[in-house]
Length: 328
Ligand SMILES: [Zn+2]
Image 1 (cartoon, rainbow, N blue to C red):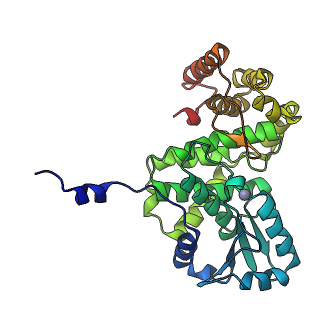
Image 2: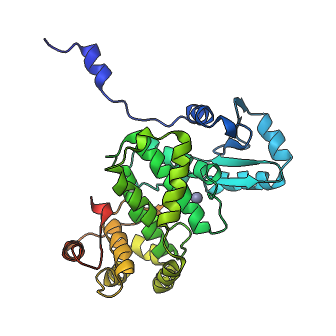
Image 3: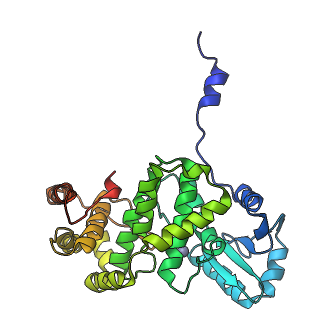
């Protein structure tokens, strides 16, 4: 018997659309203890709407901003540059200032990721900073690892273990570290480990509290050692002076420099992350500071891709360990 049109339509998966009202309501449903501790402010307009527990009030935001000058400043910053989270211990609350306007799209999952998934990721990342105990740790890199770990677990719970959008994040964080010269957001080893484990562990079965606890543990167990991070920042320091601009203009020197590291036989950990960064740049799907990095085209880059892939395959048996997640 032929399928009835209404039945067929009902089985078609609708694309996920991010809805802040719905997400905040679900967050308080899953974490009722956070109703007076984490507030959300829609920072895409000024002053923005305030979500506090079960209330959503546009006048309330003026009052809360008026009684907290630091929050007022941070809200303005979010309006201009993007989402953030802040904790105000004296006032006894934290705020997630979300700015998901087109202008401020952070594209952490790459430009080709579905917009709704990217928006949900930013929501989860900023929430993770406040929800997890070490989300705003004095060790900034650990705090970022916790926030990304939480957001990656939530992404897998929301969109399934085979979602491809999350995989670009491993390379995106490596590119940021190398071209941006700052290790704070270098969460790649943590993200990579969660993605690998998602194939054998059913993260969708975890409760909200277990998800928080597991995110924390993933971050603490897999964040890169401070010494290695410091060494990488120093080794790639030469790229800090406008390297992102050069990649945008299609300057091959920067990628070649990173490729030398990627193919280097004696620095396995750095080689691994350099290889992942180069492969990500060759895919042309990521940006820095909101500007998309130009995809290098031509025979030279095809050869480089093959060289990195060959090296990866060859060295994946004994050592050094080189796993290119972004190409999966
Ligand atoms: Zn963060």
